[in-house]
Amino acid sequence: VLTPAELAKLRAAVMPNIAKLSWANTTVANTVGAYPTTPAFAELFSHAGLLKRIREELRIRDLAYLSAVLIFKVPGEGRRPWHQDWFAYGHEAFTDRPPQLGIMWYLTPTSPEHGCLRVVPGSHRPGHMINVRKLSDPAQDLPGEVDVTTQPGDALILDARLLHAAHANTTQA
Image 1 (cartoon, rainbow, N blue to C red):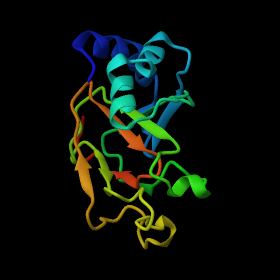
Image 2: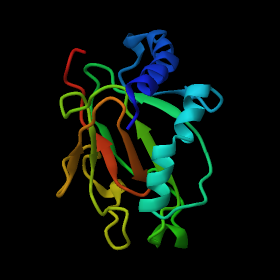
Image 3: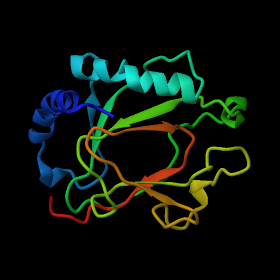
Image 4: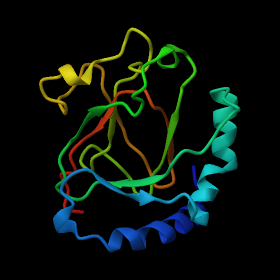
């Protein structure tokens, strides 16, 4: 979790870029560029608390930075479909060790009404993978799905193989 000062620094780095966007043209999944060289993002990737949890709880020591993007949900934006962020299904996709982690830092609170993340626990494990291409509706409710609500400054560590989606943002804010 970010301290209030760390959260304020991250918001100051990110919010001007969001403010420049035309909301009229952002009714689908919204991703804004990569931020690999900004000091605020560099500090997130080397955040001591985050690295400690990854190393101690997940027992992963060899971390490498791949990319950074800003993802947001605008008011009225629909559901985002189920997907996995890992598309290379060789032998590494079926091990206990995650081939890739995603780290999501939240700047605002999320709830189902604000378009929070939805996950299917265990869907990254061998024998539990759901073929999203066979779903009749890629945004449909799935058995066992869980809403992931957050508060500003929270970090979510995600195995890239985990099946996840997002609710619609049904709010006006």
